[in-house]
Image 1 (cartoon, rainbow, N blue to C red):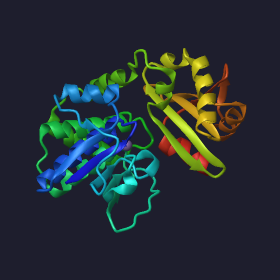
Image 2: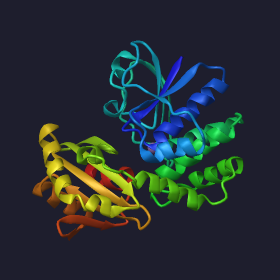
Image 3: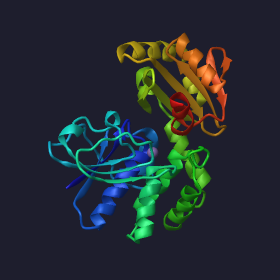
Image 4: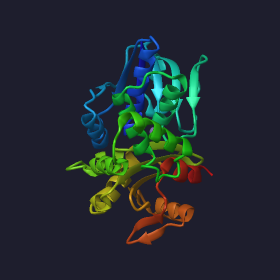
Length: 303
Ligand SMILES: [Mn+2]
């Protein structure tokens, strides 16, 4: 039995690609089941409700020796807690590779806009039956990860796949659908400041130490900016608690393609300002056209 799992702090791409790939494996006659490593975010919940899909079960560990397929991640820090005790058999991802294995495994990593794109390509290229519900999830995953083609991670392949998928799904207005998804993602209600920061949060080992970078992609920038004082406080707290070099929280204005970054301390502020020629707007670091942690933020820190 293959357990197909997306990353911690699951986003729409990781959950949808895992569910769609488990289905793909089943169609190949394999036993497979998708799981999520945490509560689905509001956008993902919206997608599963809209297409009347059952949400994957949430787990944090699997029985030792279980076979796992990692979707949308390949770094241990983002994976299931007891990965070391499991049998990793396959990885499908569109992130940089930082992986060591003790045996040969199947790896499919492509520089596409989403992991759902890779899974959709597999369905199409191998002529596997793709039903409307699974096609809907794949469509949603691509739209989510590429911010409906606004992100610089978008490729022509992603656009073609969305076209092909929508021939099956038949949504009349994809722009409208994407806005509904982004609106759902932006509706965070009374979320705590720490959960807000950690909603889409990853740690990275850069040359001089470990950094934490949280991202909030939203159509309602003010939701985050209004809470600036508590966010600054919490970032400083997380830096100490998790023993990090610096912690950032970037609020991405999806529709206008710009971002506002908050930071854990003055040193972190100085570094970010230099790296991205950020404009200090009342203490918040504004950068036009900076929207992708993966393609624009992380590579600059690494460079
Ligand atoms: Mn992804």
